[in-house]
Length: 273
Image (cartoon, rainbow, N blue to C red; front, side):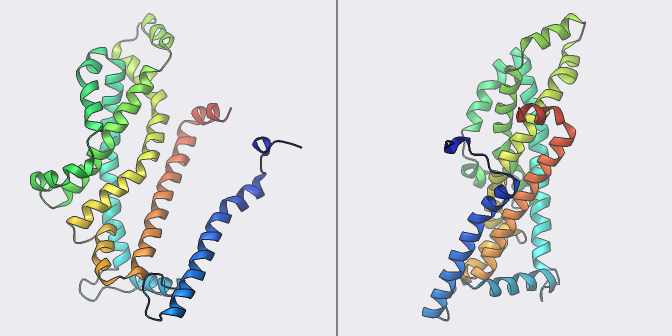
């Protein structure tokens, strides 16, 4: 009899096993919602699925009476724009500093400890400072994402550079490559897959920083909408928004994997062995 650790499910079984937890969660929710509504027809904590679908349809297809915007899409567009700017800046800064700190001993000695200390500061603790310094507009929300994501990316990428085989760097220098050529032609291509992996891991924290900032100071956005309707216990809005945010994060993750497999197939082929 094979050991459990050696049993590998086939493709159909993998799909079934992946769907099973979601089906169980959905079943538990439907039963719990029906029970609470049977006990209290005015219960708002666990609204029926049909009620959440109707509310989501209204937010997506009917313009708001005051602004004329389609609320769901306006909130999504505002949040995704902030998230894209924040993650884009964090990726650029993280890649540049991570490469420099990992490759140049002088940069590592000068900035390595600083980045390590900055990565320990809880980003939410500096949110009031950001609002004071940058105001309540878009900039403070983007800066919060950058502050929350960049130090971790820098540390991860610098360690990846330091763990590269030294033989590669020595051979490149032996062939006459300058420091700049080593960085661009040898090091950079090899740490790009790591950058994609780092961004995948930071999608969740980035959404957390974004929603927190929107909840405190914003007039549009996914986080703003959730905290706006919480006072009315509008779970038929809050729960679909949570599901929508989760779906967006999953799409981001899938897109990064798709891009990584096509841009750097050698890295994923090596990982599969």
